[in-house]
Length: 257
Image (cartoon, rainbow, N blue to C red; front, side):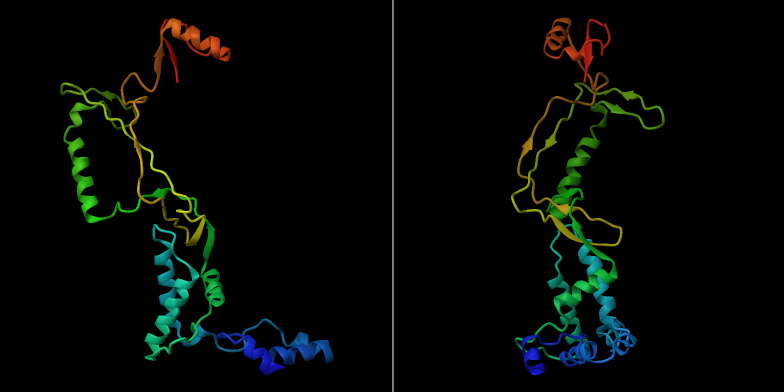
């Protein structure tokens, strides 16, 4: 029976063998319960994999931290298992036989991640657009930004400090910039959950932008962020939204958000 169980469930590294499990099952069923309790089940009886290869554990932790810090949510337990497998054969100078199982099982790697403090939870951080870090994109973005910085005197801006003041453009004609990014997700593009390591939470990947919409309803100008209604327009607004009556000043030019 033991041989049959072993043939069905091969023993992973550091796991309890079928013989040991069978022995303590017999002790629990047939022998003294005190003997079973005194064994203090759940302790550590044999050296762990990382007791023999502490350098592999250090490398695996560093690898996990690096992968969890990436912008894309592509890190999986299989990646860690393959990394440990490669490190093992590299450290021991052995050649892996084709078809050989992983030196550390997926379930063991999952426990490793939990023990190291990694968490698998909702991927709800701010989006990040893939491709923004390419050298050509970085160069073009810098040129784009510098173009507007060089024309700073053409815009309405606000001074820094505790009491900011409007700074009016000194160049003619004045320039107003308006842009709204309306990039969208594709179905199944973003992982609902991902692995996190430590307190740092990376951006999740939103993919490439797919649509841009120009908006002209809000500008940086001393008269904003309010827009004005004439007396007739204000009366029409009250006819549709009576609850607005009395919320604004009695000036002929009504102000509303």
